[in-house]
Amino acid sequence: MTFQKINIEATVNADMQTAWNCYTNPEHITKWNFADDSWHCPSAENDLRVGGKMKSRMEAKDGSFGFDFEAIYDEVKENEKIVYHLEDGRSVDITFEDKGGSILIKIVFDAENENPVDMQKAGWQAILDNYKKHAQAQ
Image (tube, rainbow, N blue to C red; front, side, top):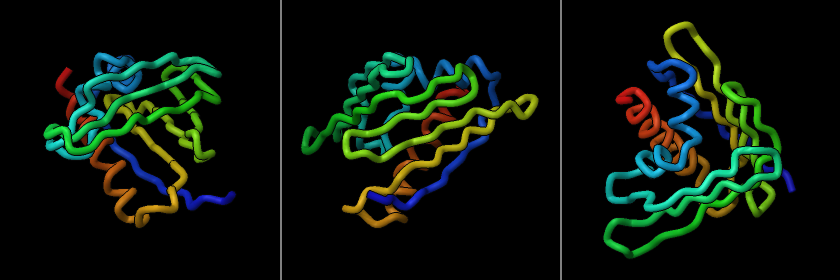
């Protein structure tokens, strides 16, 4: 199956180790992994190695809806790159680029076929923007 690629990015004013830790450490993931303030991420697990599994729970704060986001890692290069695939075969490619005083994070992900591409891009960008705010506050 062929998927449409969506690109998002953010520049984080932090050092590489802070940016990487905030993106990959479950105690940090639960602080930023949601697109809207009416949602939260009550739990996250991360076995950050090729073949390892990442899992996070996303829920509406009012309890009306929730889902697990799960993936298996295909490539992990510390402080550089993470590639994983989702259960439906879609892939996500994340790069961390040191810009001398800031870190440029680029994410390329395969769109799913149920929701409009613009909606998916906006949702993923909102999550990345939450991550940026969290990482910069560290």
